[in-house]
Every structure is written in C-alpha cells, then in structure tokens.
Image (cartoon, rainbow, N blue to C red; front, side):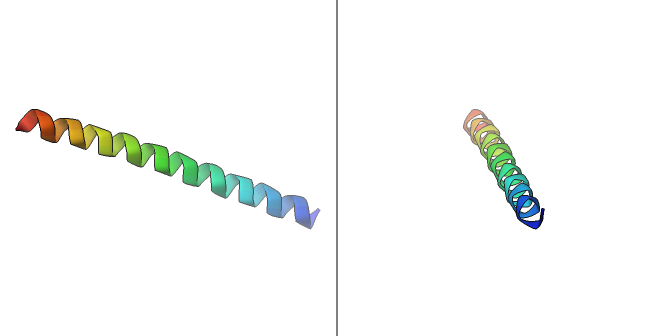
Length: 39
C-alpha cells in the first residue's frame, strides 16, 4: 500500500514537472515571437 502511494506521488510529480516545462516552453516561444515582431 505504502509503496504504491509513493509510486503514485512520484508519477504525479513527474507529470506536473512535464506540464510546467511544456507551458514554460510555449511561453518562451510566444515571448520570442513577440520580440521578433516588435523589432
């Protein structure tokens, strides 16, 4: 029981980190496009 809980927590943490990285990449891409268009 305890072990599966740890695996579940680890999976959730990994998924959250992946989502955060993806969001940051999209934000960075938008910022880059905006700065290129402003020049």
